[in-house]
Amino acid sequence: MSDYDENEDAFDENKINEEIASPDKRVRADAIERLAQKTFFEGNPEKSLVYLATVADLRSELEDHSGLMWTYNQMGYVESERAHFKEALDYYKQMIDQARKAMHTKGEIDGLSGCASMCRRMKRYNEAADFLKDAVALGIETDYRMLGHLKADLARMLRKSGELEAAEQLLREAQETFMQNGFENIVPRVENELASTLFDEANIELSLAKATEAYHLAKYDENNREIDRAQFLMARCLNQLGRFSEAFKILEEMKARSTNRKRQKHRARTDLEFARALVGLDRRREASALLNVLIPVLKSHKLFFEACDAIRMQGHNLIIVGELLEAEQTLVEAIALAEEHDFDGFFVEATTLLAICYEVMERHDDKVHQYEIVAANPLNMGRFEFWMAAGEIGLHYAKAGNSEVANRYISAISDGPANLVTPAIKAQSEEAQYWLLLGQGQKVKAKNMANKAMVNYLLDSRTDDATRLAQVLRELD
Image (cartoon, rainbow, N blue to C red; front, side, top):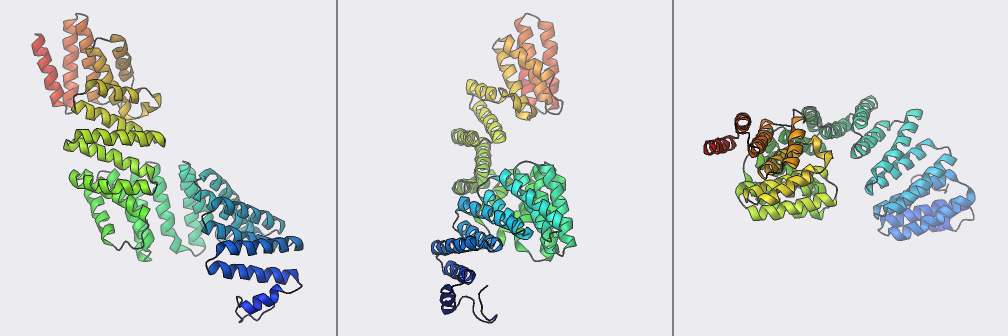
């Protein structure tokens, strides 16, 4: 190590130059490393990396594995600050290698965590999770004090990879670890992460409870970042539960607070929930105005999932307010974006909405075509939209006299899941059978089936369809 008094400035230029001239390679390496740090802090990361590369060469000659570990850590940090995540990842991997040679467990954990962070920045979540699994295993083995942080980070990656149950378990463990090691101030972050995981698991009520708990803990600690995040999650849950007034009140409070330090992506997501609350409160014109501003912002930040959600929502709004041509264009855009990014749920929802739009426009062939796209994918059978499409298609082909296709959908609806096949869908199937029986000259059976259909239409509050079918029967008599 370099020889200077503990009160002396380690970054003193004269002292650094003096030690760089030393015949002792270790002293030279330490001095150049300090020069690299000084250069970085002065705003020249490229030159800092040149100096650090020299340090790495010197420490390699000395077989100073512990020193090399620290040097590669700094090089990884500099590259990450330049947003050169792939290069940073390579340096952190070298840091791990040197830490293992030095038998420096904490350095190895830090290197694994650095690798995970870079993979996360590159959206390589599975790789990030693998690095963090190794870090957690080492942390458990060595009773690492920061183990809770590692578990929370791993849970976050598992959640992004869809391993929700494992993420939930890790977060509960992380929360306990934080409490045991004096990190109570971190608990609101973990509670928020747990609330997010529960939301992704569709456990909305429990997600709301956890987010509310996180809000109160964060408010007590005056942790504004976690307060904001908790309220966002609370509003999101309340919107899902149809409690739009409560969501709107929370979102108004969030928007009234100073936004100077809020990340733009978070603000955009908050505005999306605000628009959703407006839609739920039937304030659709206000929602449309907000969405018009918000959609380009979401796209610019590459928040394509949220953008697709917003465009789909806007298309639905435009149908309700009667702007049908604009609704058609908007929903076509939503479908294209969903298809491009494999957002299957939004693809099905937007396609179904486009079918509804065509129905209002009385473009019946186009309507059926969109429903056929939804029904063509058997993976959609667990969604309500599939069975809605089945009812519409079956009825369409029955009226057209195509018994083969109509019967295929009638049979599917008959065997369909009770929680998704609504009375209205049953009614469409029964009306389809009415038209097929009528075409076969079986008037009595046809009338009986029509009467069943009318009952089911009424059970689903589809009085217009029941009335229409009653008129058809009167004309038949």
